[in-house]
Length: 363
Image 1: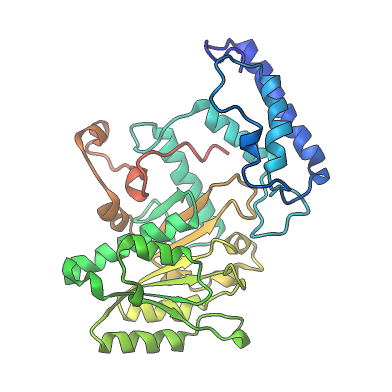
Image 2 (image 1 turned 135 degrees about the vertical axis):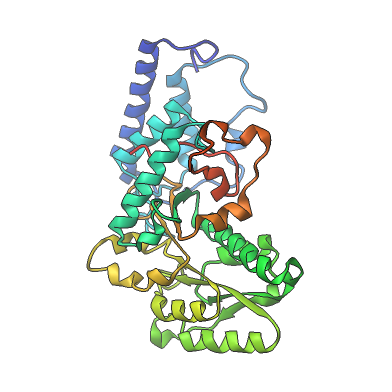
């Protein structure tokens, strides 16, 4: 891109920004003219691009022309009004502008001290969203819990599974990991299976419970109770249940209150994956689908489904943030928050798998 080897002045930046915005605006203006599913064959792009990186800069207009001619043909247009695959992932002008602002400032916010605004704004916005969903006060950052933006619901279920695993192992001993049992319905997202693989849960201890089409594939509390009783009798340790509000395959909604009572009785971690349908529950007429969430230890929904935010924005709330921190925290000298000693601050690096994280809550 012209000028990429030296700093741009303000006028050049404005000119490039205008061109970029115009390009995106034209894309949306004409998006209905594209075939929704990309028509290219595997490997198409290698034939259109050079074998090695260019040695001379190009103008921004030339770059955008290449995007138009070479990249857009390989795009499946998720924002098209004719797109009906997988799940709705519609962005908005606000989401697009928020991404521009975040990218332009380009702050890194893995700890409070690295950019206090990044952490504090995310805490506040996640509290706003929790209140809009009428989540219990235990999920707010003003108490022992709080919210954090994960990349996806897959990351969300992984971090809470690790927190739950370590919590129970502190009680029963680390050698008991082979006895830990996870429960879900046969409609639960495969992300739970991957989380179990990463978390060292034996495949035989991942109890996938059959559901009944006559009850819209919801997980039956009786089925869960029976499985737990059998496993306890066999010397196993039930420790984690993943219930779903809007499964991928059938949009099934599990009975949260009844399931939560069972997990509480058995001292298990109760996670609610509302990635698909949780957004709808902000509407009063749909809020009843998450009745019983007060029994959950963690709750997750994807704002990039129906909330007009850009991918990736998966909101996770937890009642006891210390459980995440004990499992995921590392605190070498270069990451210590010396400037905040004596104060209680959130370091989101301890709530997620990666260390680094970008500024998300700009809109």
